[in-house]
Length: 220
Length: 220
DNA sequence: TTCATTTTGTGAACACCGTTTACTTATTCT
DNA sequence: AGAATAAGTAAACGGTGTTCACAAAATGAA
Image 1 (cartoon, rainbow over the protein chains, first blue to last red):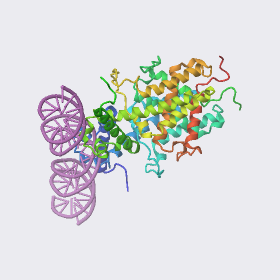
Image 2: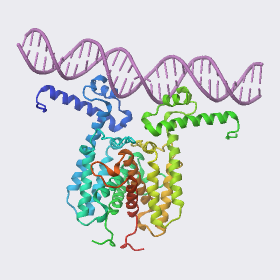
Image 3: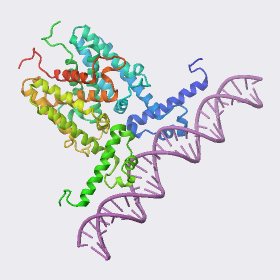
C-alpha cells in the first residue's frame, strides 16, 4: 500500500501527469480557459488527446487542479506576510494588499477560480468540500488575522469575527476581479485617478481595514 | 431615413429580434453562458441556427446585448435609490446594498458581465467604448454619490472622489461575485455567521461606507 | 526468460459547438 | 407584374470534450 514513488511505474506516471499539468499551465496562463483545449495540451506534449483521460477524468478536473495549485501560491504568499510580526493594523493592510497582488500574478487563474455559479436552489452537500481547499485555507488565514485584530482591541468588538472576515474577503476579491477585468482599472479612461495599480491596491487595502478599525469615539 | 417602426418590415424585424433575445434571456438566466447555444436559441424559437446571424453578428454580440440590458436594470434600480432624498450616509449605504441586491437578481448575467479578462499588454483603444455602456452609467451614479458625500462633509476630504468611488465599486462588486459564486456565502458551511444573505449585504454596505466616513478625530 | 495481465497510448468516432456558404423562399419596391 | 432585396434554410467546415475498441508497452509471476 505504498503510495510513494518507489516503483518506476509510479515515478513515470507522476512525471507524465506533471508534464500534462505543466503544458496546461503554460497555455492557461496566457490564453485562459478559452484557449485551453485537451487537443492543444495533447499537441504540446506530443500525446494523443485520449491519453490525457488516463490521467484526468475530465477537462474540468484538470483545470480544477490548476486553480487549486494557484490558490496554494496565494495561500503561501499571504501566510508569509501574516507571519511577519509587525504592529497590527499595518500587518492587516499588507495581508489584504498581498492577497490582491498575488491573485493578479495570474489573472486568468484567479478569475477562473471564481467563475462558476452556485446551483440555485438545492443547497446540496456539494461534492468538492470547500473546507479542505486552498481557497478555504487562504481565507482561514484572514479569519485568524481579523480575530487577532479583535483580540488586540484594534478592531470594533461588535463586528463578529466571521462576518468581518467575510466582508474583507469580499472587498479584496472585488478589487482583484476588477483589475483583472479592466486591465487598467485604477487609471480607467473615464476617470484617471493618477494612481498606479500598485498604489491603488494599497489605497483600497487601507480603506478596507479602516472599516474595521475602532474610531476615537468607540469605547473599550 | 426614418429609423422608427413605421413599415411592417421593420416592425417584423424588431419582433423577431426581440423573440431571439427573449429566448436567449430565458435560457441564459437559468443555465448561464454554458447552457446557451445558438442552436438552442434556434430550437426555442423554431428557426434555423443560421437565421440568427441575420440579426446578430455573433454569439458574443447577442450576449453583450443581454448583459447591457441587465446593467440597464441595475442602473435604473440604483438611480431610483440614489434619488430618494434621505440623510446622507444612509442613502449611500442603501445605494451600495441596492446595487448588490439588484446584481444578484440575475447572478449569471452579473457574473458574465465581468467574466472577461482584459488583454495583457497592448493597452489598445478597446473597441467597445466603456464610457457609453450601462456599466459606466451605473458607476457614474456612485461617483456622483461619493462626490455628494464629500461636499456634504460626510466623507474624508483627502480621499479623492474617483479613488473612493472605485474602491466602493470594487467592494460591492466583490460581495456580489462572492454570493453569486458560493450561493450561501454569508452562512457558509465552515463558518456560519447567523446572518441571512440580506442582512449580510446590509452589514457589508455599512462597512464599505464607513471606510469613507469621517471619524471624530478628523477635522473639517 | 516466457507468458499472462495490467497499464498506457492511439485512431476513429459521436455529439455538440459557432460560423459560413450557396441556395430557396418571402417580402418589398417600382 | 416583375425586379430587387431581405429572410430563412440545409449542409458543410473546423473546432470542442469525451468514449470505445483496440494495439503497444510495461509489469508481475512462473
